[in-house]
Image 1 (cartoon, rainbow, N blue to C red):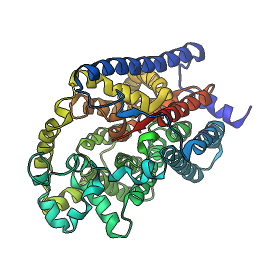
Image 2: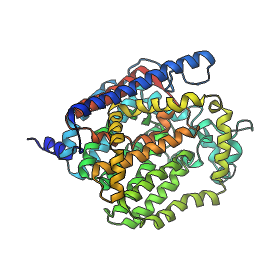
Image 3: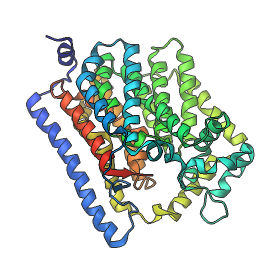
Length: 465
């Protein structure tokens, strides 16, 4: 028996029934396809009737635009390599080599998908449009004054109101690109590369966290699915990919601190808190990452990292507050701004479920099948958690459930109507490891399905934000 086969057999979830389980997995993927189809049909009807969705290709913020580009040859080649060799290498590579390989493969996948749209439209110009951060770099010549007056420009109406993405996020997001400009990495090209390189590291953070909270084999099974995910379409040159990485490293460092599987648990706890504080000043909605952080503490049954985590988490808020930026006031102004613009017209009754159709596209059919197994294993995982003896697959189930609850909270808030295929990247990242629950046979087929979804979306649609 091959090494790969032995590992797959040993790590298969308990109660796995290859026949009935496989059919139910396919049914879950099919249900996702149906949800997307209904969202497209209903969305088109609503948009034709009253034009309140503000998207051209519901449920995605996209336009029909079949095209090819420099990445058309590269992206399928990357996908084929991951499908063919990913499952084997995930088992055989040493841990350090696996992490570097996953980061490299993720970089190649995101870059090649982005280049289907070309260097300019796919990467260098993404963050320079009228809604984006780079439009206001010149207004931050005096950073202190810009922070003190930041809230005065959130609402639509007063002269000089911020572009949509600047107004919709705390100033930590814009300051990232201001600082890049200050060190000589100005312009859309460097900004796009920054987002892709940092964003791709989220795969490594997720692998580290899954290994610490579940086990080595579970993390290795998840690795190819973390790399080859359709959500990479929106990670390319999107600031939300960068946000996802910052949040992911906060979770990973807390997992290392709580399990004490790092040389300095204290430094990891402090670093986790520091990154969580930064996360909250990159995007208001990412305060919900606290649900994942709490799950880490519940799974590890320890509060030991909490004091240092809290100390680290205070650094960024204190710094911004002393600089004159009021986070709470800004958030309430943002809510008002949201309803001044498209958010005030987009129907909640449609987007509260159509957002999930966007998620289904972004996470892909393999993740949907994994979520089916997550739901099936949830009652047993909760029971085992109460006894204090939780097997690795059950710990993964609980981590994925926490991410899904955070995503649902964002959905029900009404502050995420449309564009969630991009905005929810920090939550969707933690749904992807659910594919590790799928049985070994057929794993390459599921990986291929993930790639096909991404390639079709990127070649047939022009995705914007």
